[in-house]
Image 1 (cartoon, rainbow, N blue to C red):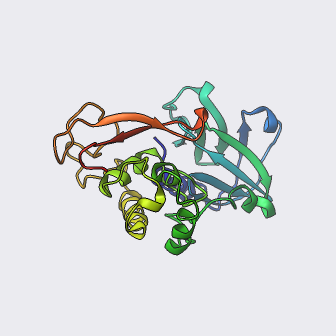
Image 2 (cartoon, rainbow, N blue to C red):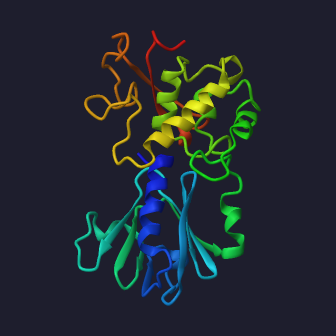
Length: 258
């Protein structure tokens, strides 16, 4: 599941092959931009912003979001794609490389000087140069009645936490995801832990919050019905969200979290 660290690595990998390169071909397989041709334009860089990707190309910015199923792959010319071609939404080619965005949840081109407008609603980025824990804390405490499990997922609070980290953070801090923000002790420690976890995983292909890549790599996420790694109590599963479209699987230990 794409989290901030996944998107960070995607941007890093894309920038490594596209930075400063001239596009020889572009193919946007979405109706709104199907006729756009960026051949001849130079890719200045590729950066992540929370869970968003920004390709700065000539006078435009390509803004994409992976949502739940999306991914970016980089191939040498002639290499077989690892996902079917019908899932491709964007194809960018240079003399040496082919970058393919599959099942992207958002694909849009905006003027370069307006690129900040697509991400300016985001809170401070856990993996970005604008990271500011004090701003994240102010954002988090703005609505003390909101469940902590929803607040942590809100990209306007802090950018980069997805559902995996949300569940793991609540477990590691010993709080139920439904507990109101105003009743959570030591919120700065929660923010600091979010920062340390995502920083520790940003360059790993396999994410871990338990500190090991051998055996269980998550404390509660995806472990419904299995014993808690700390106390042995059965992990429970439910959903939490502010609307039907925003419902996310939630996992917790009824003994370790209160």
